[in-house]
Length: 146
Image (cartoon, rainbow, N blue to C red; front, side, top):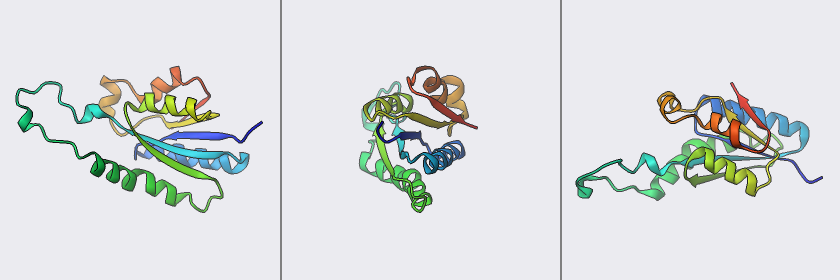
């Protein structure tokens, strides 16, 4: 059997930080590799309706990616750098649940870790949570961390 691989959905929330902690702790015991994955949703930057495109602010994609890497991924990489676990991280554009499912399939992840909640309580109510979507559709074992 090949090396174990754990994928962790991260969004900068305290719940995703706990999921990262749980994944790294288990990886220390199993020899698994850990990949932190975060996603930026295009929907956050596209208005539902606009009458004047000139007043719609333009998205600075590179700046947004830099901020997310600096504020979400780098702190996690630094926090677990001395764990002895091989850690990597990636940022993707798209719906977080779809990105995580897609990456876990492409990378043949053995397990997905996610916080039970994310950064937005309102999004959990109206859109449905990433954790809930993953729990029902991931196709691999998922650990929802409280």
